[in-house]
Length: 68
Length: 194
View 1 (cartoon, chains in turn blue, purple):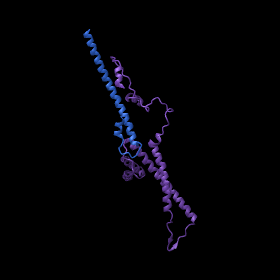
View 2: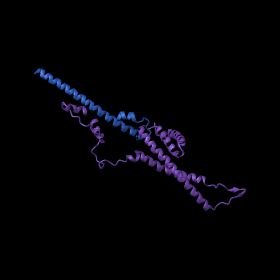
View 3: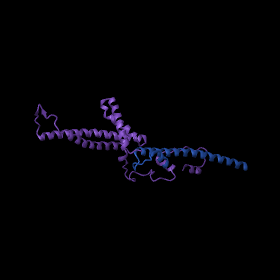
View 4: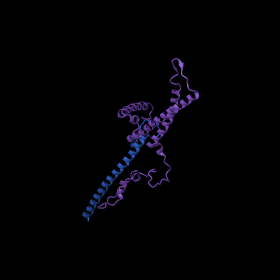
C-alpha cells in the first residue's frame, strides 16, 4: 500500500522535505481507497471460500454415505 | 485476516449477514497484517498528543496567514511609496514668482497623513490579494490532489477576478487572465513544484 500510494501521489523531485497539501490529500484518498478495496475483495473471497468449503463438505458427506 | 478466519467459521446453511464495520480503525485492523500504532480507535483525545496540524495544513489558516502577512507587507510598502512620492508639492512657481509654501511642520503633517492613508490602502489591497490567493490555492490543491504550477494559475484567476469584482464581469475576466499569467510566470521560477 505504501509503495502504491507513493508511486501514485508523491512527486520525484524533492524540493521540500514535507508532503505538500496536494500530496497529503492524495495519499489520504489513496489509503482510504486501498483499504476499502481490500475489504471488499476480502468479503468476496470469504464468500467464495465458504461456498467452496460447503461444497467440499457435502461431497465428503456423500462419499461417507456411499462408503457406509 | 478475512481469508484465515474463513477456515475457522462453520459452514452454516443460512449464514446471517453481519453489518460490515467500515470505520477506518476497523478497516485497518482487518486489512493490515498487524495492528498499526496509529490506528487506535479507543484512544480518547486526552491520550493522544495535541495535534497542531490544522495550523499549517488547513485552508482557513493559510488564508488568515495570507491576510496578516499581506497586510504587514502592505503597510511597509505603503510607507515606502508614500514617503517617496509625496515629498514635493505640486506647484512651486507661478508666473515666475515662488508660491509661498506652508511652514515645514504643516508640510510634514500633510506628508505623514498622506503616507498613512497610502499605507492603509496598500495594506488592505495586499491583505486581500494574499489572503484570497493563499486560501484559493490551498482549496484547489487539496481538491486536485496534485502539487504543480496549475494550482497557482487557477487561484491567480480567482484572485484577479475577485479584485475586479466591483467593476463588472469583463473587468473580472481581464483581471483573471492577467493575474493568472503573472502567477504562472512567478511560480514557474519560484515555486516548489516538480
